[in-house]
View 1 (cartoon, rainbow, N blue to C red):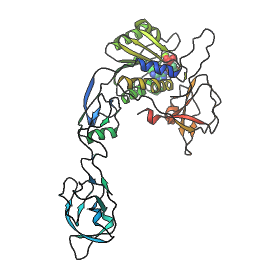
View 2 (cartoon, rainbow, N blue to C red; view 1 turned 135 degrees about the vertical axis):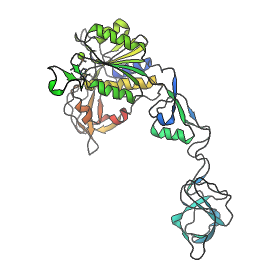
View 3 (cartoon, protein in one colour; view 1 turned 120 degrees about the vertical axis):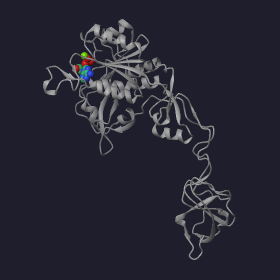
Length: 420
Ligand code: AMP
Ligand code: MG
């Protein structure tokens, strides 16, 4: 997130909001990596963060080998196209041949070691059998030295650090670890997260049928995407369900969550209404370090501590909750696991829409790519409209006070990268 630091004018009597960049920097300063690591099967290590460097005890490939099915040759012996040579040996992948007899070629297959003395491979499409001379081949092409040979160690050299502590493992990284013989990997332990939603209006899907919902009731949607997001971030979740909008219930929930968790994550109840009990309860039990950020949606975000647990309060509005998770909770959780690279990289894209409602706060607009490679805007940008985050395939990170005209270059963040 590199957009210019937002300068937020402070109306008389109201403290100015924290800029998102400042807030994130402060959060990351609090995110001291958790002690302890797990040894897991390489099969199960996808998305985990490495707790140690992974160093190779061997080179990959282990020796020079053929990258084609064909014939291994001594290139200096081939002086003209169409030369006929005897096939003196056959080397398949998984076996190894002897030194190549001068004046002959070796039948060779992809992945098989190059025999000593050979310095090139001619692919079989450039060779043909010789009628009446079994065991001989006509080489139709003059090979260049080294052609179709994969060199020993060209992927990994012995002693190389192939993966570094703090790297988040991808499927390709698991394959690379396996290629140097690692059947287990040491990874950061999973953050223990206690999750609860606040709101007397909330009902769980399945508990009350849609046609039986009482006036004012809504289904708890945040709980579903927050649990899924936490799982993607490698967390173990204790789901404490819905906590009523009462001070005593909020205090009880925070107290019991603080005991055995690294992070308490809540949604709702963190604004300034009389029914918003989260902030005073956190202040009573612990401390609040951060509250209210100059972003839209997502302004009421809060961070603090309760006992030894970190606390993060997300706004109740679903899109606010979703985006503050991605912008603030995600990097925090990755850093708790010791991840070095926690930033997502926005890319420049063309706006195929106009945005006249420049806000004082930095704004995250739900958009999706169109067939022309530009971005179209979801019509309703309200923080309650979760459809925008499903229709969209990302957001435009729009600096404060910025209007957007059709054709402008804007900063786009793809959900596909963010949700990984
Ligand atoms: P709050 O932050 O508690 O003031 O809630 C702001 C808005 O978000 C209200 O309209 C709530 O009904 C709604 N809301 C709060 N929590 C949830 C939730 N878990 N799922 C869906 N909507 C919610
Ligand atoms: Mg509420």
